[in-house]
Image 1 (spheres, rainbow, N blue to C red):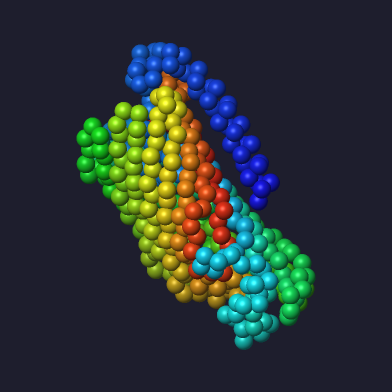
Image 2 (image 1 turned 60 degrees about the vertical axis):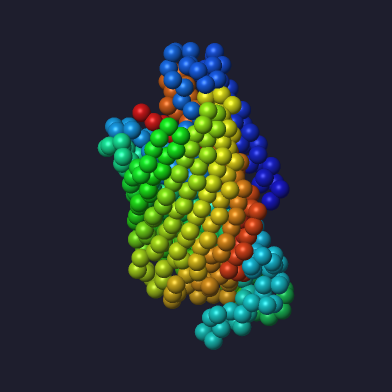
Length: 371
């Protein structure tokens, strides 16, 4: 974990250093909240929410915005509720829900120990009118999960293995509908759908308690898509006063129907943020987020095994994260309208439907260009 954090900090620091150097050159007069050296109105670095917030802002009629976001999630260790558990505790105290099926032991014998997820998100926004902004986002996902396998009885570890999956994720389309706006406050409705373009039938090799390797359908956390059309309602508020901006957002994910015998749990997300603009080209943000995700409804008959991730009851829970962000905005020349941003999130509270993997770090970096 510490080696990962060290690498992430070094990479992020390098990005920030070179970004600041480039963007600082775009506003030589240090005009603060005044005009740029070209006599143009400054582009506020905090004009958008922190990069980890989606669907936070609207555009004026005829405007476009293209974006790319990279999100990395790092998970290490397990917990049930708020209690951290070792692999030995899990296999000693957790029943295998598939016991009775041929070859299935009474207790769990395989435990995930670490997982990473990298998500590449490509977005586009267009405003046909001042009161409506359309948005679409596609994504490419890469997941990796390390496991330890125990023998058929007792606490002897017989080996480790890693499963991986990658490919296109689900596609999101939505409309942002303006409800209210004045010189300080803005409120809009988020109304969207998630289209199941991501696979939920990925397979991989697993080391079983009897020492054999078998190709299986990967458990739920390793799949790339929900398999269902999901409704994405939300409400976003933002405010601005001099060098300060702030905002709050609610986003829901509600599953419709099922696929492969199950549907993922509904999700509720609430986020609030505050940002301070040091100069038009640079601002810092702080954000608090809360996420609640329900358990899976149903079960995929092809996902069977003495591992916690195969049990649909061991999914979801509550997470509270604190996120710190840096936002940069080009002011003139060819970089005007371009934004770079990075945000890192650390957990404050985790209460999980476990045993399951706990999220330790979320890093999001991105580029946005409006024209």
